[in-house]
Length: 172
Image (tube, rainbow, N blue to C red; front, side, top):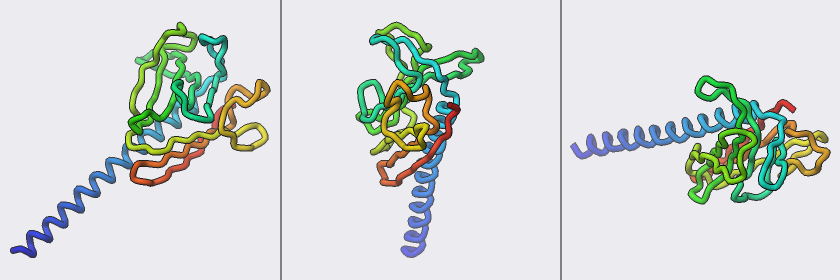
């Protein structure tokens, strides 16, 4: 009876572990799908900001309160085609956050809606492919850069130490 109990316990433990791993990878896949869709719909349109004009695509070299990546995006929301400003960044709870502004040119004090889109992330890094086919840590680096980079490389490291790197081609 003891051997049967241990065997059943091992099977149940294995099933729970598989369920947890499946759930984790399902959440990662959903995030990557969302990120890919968002960056593929990026618009080369700058926006008005409190300090003047913000570029269509702004990628920060280091994490800031404004987020690591912010860009204009065309999307259908609630059956209405509209352009929005969105951003991605890593918060203090080790969650990748999606920031959504209500439009492109909004009042300077407009606060974006913030949504956690992937929890359990230790590292969230982005790099951008410039016209010379060199990966850079910030975008734009100069006023001569196009509004949108040629591609974006996303690197995340999960709390469980798995590293994921994806490259997304952009319409520039």
